[in-house]
Image (cartoon, rainbow, N blue to C red; front, side, top):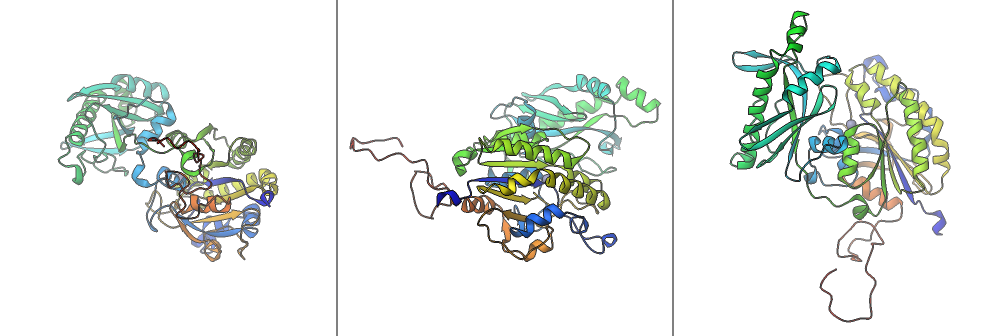
Length: 447
Ligand SMILES: [Zn+2]
């Protein structure tokens, strides 16, 4: 009987896949309108439903959604700055605060800084010159440094008596004033958050003063370009204690992704990571990653295969481009999915972390995304196509938050009967790694 059991899971994450309907597609979403024979074939052979990592309508960043999808409580999320630092190999002390930051073009409007261009184009040599000028600072006993993670992007780390509960300065919209850095309401009287907010503010003012007349910027101004003269910051965070993924769910995990934030997330939860690179064809990239996943099945029980391509396409606000990217991913899937679909021990899940609308002002949006479970014994419903609308008529219904990991354990026949305590921790998987009963009756204190 045991031979019939699903034993491993591949979670194929098409980042930002969900979208809205467009007149130009006959009131369909890009995924609905796209020609996706391979995605449809998998949906037709499996159970379908909708997924949202938190509350319906809530627009989630990728890293928060992934964190929950990997079975973790959002309260333990350390902040994107921390994850990018881990992903980029930037050392962080346990009490350090890490803030996402990138260079921008700013101007002084009656004493208030306004962002002219959030993401300016600048050569890598020029960026390095600017970084040289502002990479280290100290204010109020707080040591501050900026470390580049790529191009104009980086991490500002704060070491000293600091906490991460203060506002962003990045307004996200060109032409808007920067946001004042101040502690969150709940932390108004927290000296660590106040100290961090004060020190970061001092640093950002110092950076602006130091860069506005820098030779790089004098040259840019002389050539009709806006000066790259300051940072915008967002999403401060700090390391927290989390239980490793393998201990939490009894599965050996591997994440295959190109973005440093996903590699950082894997490191944060103790999942192995495999760095891959984005080339010109997202479908070929996906096929290559699925090939790596097939190799990984020898050593891992849970493999996350990630592509950022649909999300990036959504951010261009061009629904036709997103449709083309989806069709490319479907072709890539078709090249590699065959052996995975034939594997009698494998549960395949195809889904996304959130919706990324390819029109309108939102960065991400709060509608659910389609989800398919495929594998031997999985309930087969009557859904024939993989998209946001057909999925709603499937057998899985609406799955939310950490339910995904419980559903995975369930399909792998590892779901613990509620109430059983085979280990001192009430873990959701079964059997737990328990201590054998010894005939020796001497009292034991430790577990
Ligand atoms: Zn995402």
